[in-house]
Image (spheres, rainbow, N blue to C red):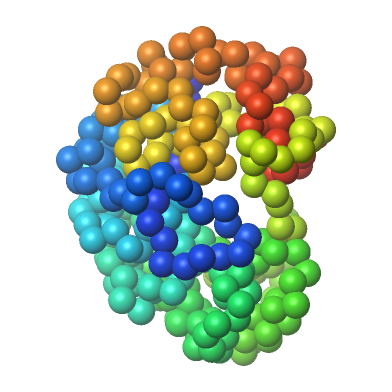
Length: 275
């Protein structure tokens, strides 16, 4: 199998407590460079793109520069998702990483934390980073994945000041500047083992992506925040072995029949987007 991307969680620790995020009760952990080396070697041939995200804030990682260098050495492009709060301190690490392809900045974190800091300062340093990154060929997506939240008006007003040129629409995104996009979507319900069953019967997990948690656990999608559907550990086994095991095959074949083999999948709000 070859995936369009693999979510490689480099830490499950975050500096914020966003109201829309379920967080995780897993032991706080940072992926070590040695472990990252092993995982990147084992993922080679399965994807060209690593997403430094699943849970946690990647800019907190003390060895972020080393991990980005490892990705370059192994021939990966890196996409990274951040709340952007730490960009003033860590932005240069990103800008100096040849492997970095794309940065997603989740601006909904401002509203998700009760609008607890100055919106103009926040948008301005995110916008400043976006412009500098775009000049180096890095794509930056500014995300508002919170529907029509009340705080969006203030965020959009600040964005219009930061990007005064006429905005235009391209496919599903708004182009703010060359290589800088605004992406808006409705908030969704994370999979919840205690939640109600939903109508979704298909997911792209195990088809175009998988996730690898910061302890090496392989999960079928980027929303398994607790590692509930643990398919195996990539630090201990090869990916081919993990993907060909009965649990992974049951998930894949079930979705082919429009059936959910796992209870967590039957309680996922995001999967409803796939019908």
